[in-house]
Image (cartoon, rainbow over all chains, first blue to last red; front, side, top):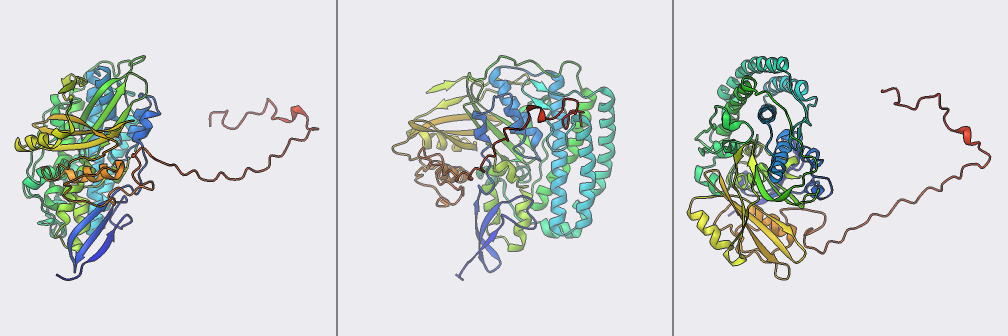
Length: 360
Length: 166
């Protein structure tokens, strides 16, 4: 066997929006193995749970990541509510679902734009982000924030959305979807996109299961599993079904996200139509969390786990987040093995790595 | 076996996902049983306690999670690897190894302490020494002139910056 070369990929790389590091062992242009390493921008946010009161910690949880911010806040609040034995109101559950799906749309559109940029398709990148900007405007209109929503709190939500705004959101979402469908067609049919993604970085269903893949990476390999099926928030009352593709390559992972965007537009419309009346929060004043549990939610990148341990005091004893990106590192290493060096950026991008989440 | 009934409800939906405590020698045996049943490894995580490490593992089947907790003594920090049973375990075990300094016999892909590259090696081993940066020399405080009148502060009529709501 010829002598191999080690090529560092990241932490700074033109296609990487965030710093992930891989040492690529190459035989000529082919990857023999990829050695990942994390910790480059680790922030130690989990430890802050021992120093901030459990109610205030929701703000920190939401700041784990700027892309999945709302769902981190939602997951943390949901876990604490379970420890407190508190049930949120139906309206709060629907509002949380609506914002979570808006968050999924902006995350998937961000990813599509970055992918187009990685393929060298600059105009597609700009059109994708132009559409994303309209979703960001909806976030701003309904929450007051753009990156950090700041609306989720232990016991419900901090802000209501009036009927007029809800109706406007429902209309806008359908208009944006119509505009998005034109962009989605380009991703599906364009020759350059297909050339870079079809048959690249294939993950079989058996490997996806054994290597613990989550989210679109897993569903693109033919496994029908979506944590929203647990029925948390309002998902149990809405009409939807997990999006599954069979081929397991980069194109399938792209297709899953494209179809999930349509699904999220539809889920928002359903939330707007069925939004129940009533209060948006229940008081948790004077209550202290007690016990240990794990709560799972579906982020745009896949299943996220929150492990909480509380001992009846106002500070949590332990707060741990298992992010979807961490779960997808093992499948990524497997997919990179045997791939061409030129395909590495595309394969890495199709797991949609969120280093912020990973380096919590 | 001891079980914590801590799991509550999620917006009206019960999610019974309790933690079951198992002995360390049942760690691999339990994983083998779950693998044979077609379960998925969800996560492995750990916490440092005064006299031991707590390690938690979760398996999923049909959206129902089974969580286990075991104890690893501090004097013999050795955790048998599950990576031969669940290939997904190797990233979690490399992380545990780098955080707690465990010996993980049977680890199929060992990054040799280079997976989690932290400034402080093995940060949760219990013998952490924090390096304190040298404090910057304090600038010599200038004593206020004794002759300065007490009324030399801002006049009351002048609003402080920001007081107008800007």
